[in-house]
Image (cartoon, rainbow, N blue to C red; front, side, top):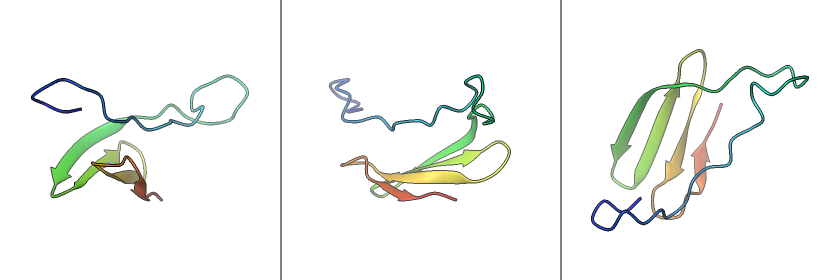
Length: 62
């Protein structure tokens, strides 16, 4: 999101975690860090992910 305009640039597609019959847990994000052109999120239980801020391209995941 652009802070000066509030325009949403992109948002990640989340898995169907927590949905009945998938066997997946709900997704939680305990910590968020923004540095340079990267936004990273640390998971509460395991893993995390990182995205390119400008494009929304996922850069890393467990």
